[in-house]
Amino acid sequence: MPIYEYRCRDCGHRFEVLQRMGQGPEGLVCPKCGVEALEKQYSTFASNTGETAQRGTAAAGCGPGGFT
Image 1 (spheres, rainbow, N blue to C red):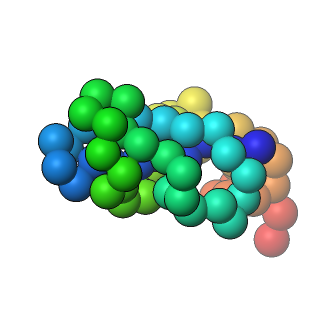
Image 2 (image 1 turned 180 degrees about the vertical axis):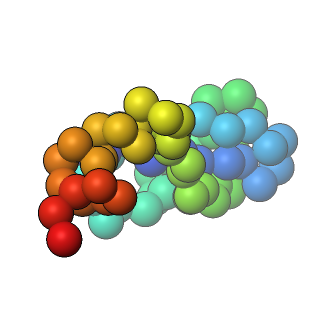
């Protein structure tokens, strides 16, 4: 099950919920103020874009210096 992030429209509190794909905020309440007015947020994720990641891509034949 994926983790979804929600924001309370009343107090602005952000929190995460482990729930099935496709489920919405029905039945959820803000853990800070208890209100049901929630918005599902678009989560961001971290990725490594440094030199190490670039070398790994080239070594795998997917980037510059790989297969042609």
